[in-house]
Length: 333
Image 1 (cartoon, rainbow, N blue to C red):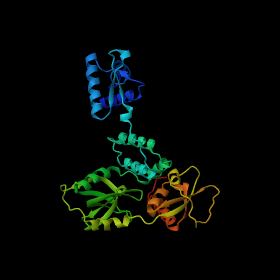
Image 2: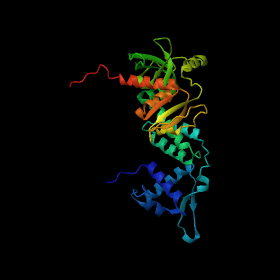
Image 3: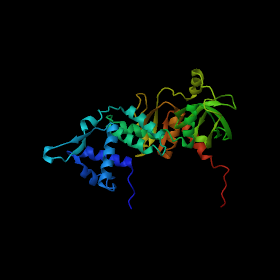
Image 4: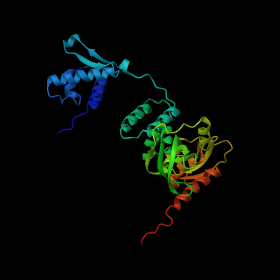
């Protein structure tokens, strides 16, 4: 037996049908052609279902018109008033659409993933900026998912409730438990960062969510710590502030690293002319050196940094660190 259609899906089917009807749809046409209404076991059950759905849609602000026509006698029809239902033109810039795209990535919880995906698709469709799609593509890989730690930390920041988690330090590789008063979550340098007060150290610290291991647990009651002062928060965030905009010169294999290519700009006036036999020379603006370095490392050998030297050094450092991760590991031959 076919699976029963959920009421919400049936409502959506009805809206689609009434929006796309050439003139009007009668109740009988709705019952026979709109998925979900064929399940009504009787005429009375269909009438109750249809009337209830019409009232629900009108409560949601969808203008359903009752259409009568002398040529059809008492046979009443229905349609959506497209003039009243249509959204005004949305003039979204590429930057605005890009920010919305990045925000939608945050809410990838199973309960809302479909809603954010549909909404973003509609926004892309109405965005007038010719480069809007490229900008979304450029932003997409730059903020990775926060993993299982993200949701609990969002709640803890809002509730001003301390948390405890196991953390692997970036510089030493030390793994230890931390107890933190969470102040703020930042999207920085390719991932999510928690800024807060480390109770063991008695000072503000930053923690990359990608280095949080296991489950984030709450400590104490909500509201158990005082929110930081504006100066305390500013001091904690200073190390994550972006510097002035600079231009990176990259040599990219053809048809690779499309997100980086999407952000390309003309070469600076003082940039020496560079060519490469097998790669395209691409200029990409950036502010945070490590943020761009972590993105470029993800492209592997598809991208070579030509300038500036500091960015190239950062990329090489990350690659060398990755290459030593398996040192000390032995396999039986």
